[in-house]
Amino acid sequence: MKKSIVILALVAISAVAMQSAYGQSDVATQSLNLAVNAVYKIATSGNPSALTITTGTAGTDALTSVSDATSTYSITQNYGNTVKITANLDAALSSGYTLQIGLASSKGTSAGAVDISNATSGSAVDVVTSIAQGADANKAITYTFSALASAGMLSSTTKTVTLTLTN
Image (cartoon, rainbow, N blue to C red; front, side, top):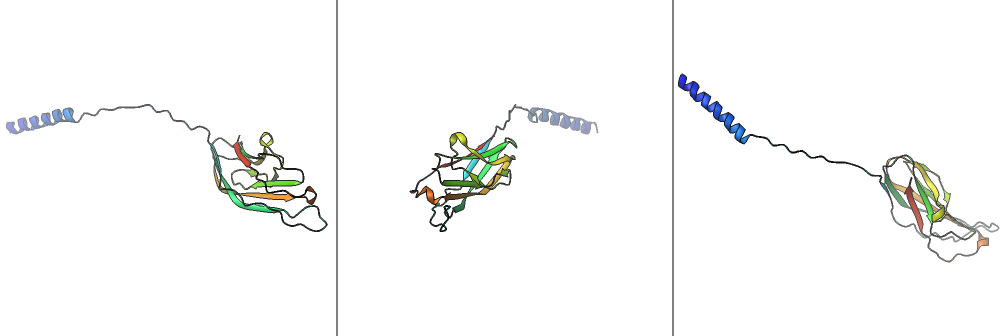
């Protein structure tokens, strides 16, 4: 019996010695700084079709306007509820020609159809305001082009519309 206790004691001591020799646990730690900066992203799906006025009503100076709603925009922002989208042209249109833009929105307040005919980079106009944090995807952009007969013909011209997501 003494032999059994001695053997059992030796096995226990051996197990403890093995555990401390091989079962040690080393721990390493690291400090990690995390941050999320302000993110403003806006993208469009492409260019709208050509807006060409081809008709009017006899006796009326206002020709029949044309519209296009084939393009969309998407945004992502994490800044806050004070974000808005502005729109402007690269150069103003001549008197008698009007270009309106309307942006649908589920995250902000759309201003509806907004005249951007004279809005240039220094005078961009608000088209969506009070945009909440998050994302708004594939929202419709509607362009409406109108002209007065008294303004005359307008040769095909390309205008660049800039949409800016800003606070």
